[in-house]
Length: 168
Image 1 (tube, rainbow, N blue to C red):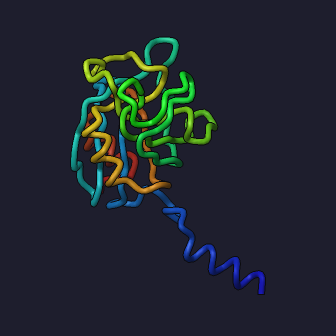
Image 2 (cartoon, helix red, strand yellow; image 1 turned 90 degrees about the vertical axis):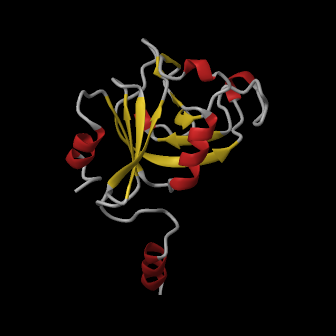
Image 3 (cartoon, one colour; image 1 turned 30 degrees about the vertical axis):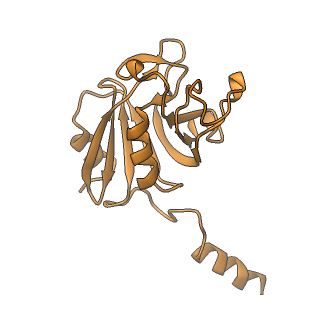
């Protein structure tokens, strides 16, 4: 009986995706630190490219392929006890936390900003910062469990997507 229940849980698990990821067509995000840009790939093609801010020297944004673990609207900023939704909150309106450096999705993330002039620069404490309207769009499109690739690369997003299996 336990085996049947376990098998059912694995089949209808709310954690997405099961198995290899990404498969061509699956949602995938690539952050290219060299270009200060983020590409949203879905259905095997690049849907959007957004400008981003990345970690400053000494607080570099970690590189690698990570899993999206946490999605939060109007995130609370713990470091300075700033509530979500406050105009003083540097995390902006959305948080997409990923598991860089064996964290739980609450340390490193893609988030909005209350300082749009910072976009396109290396100024963060390691996170990836986007304009609020851009991260709000991305927040609606991406599922928990999808892959986020952070890379420092001179290739195009299409070349990177093909190399990592997000584009055929």
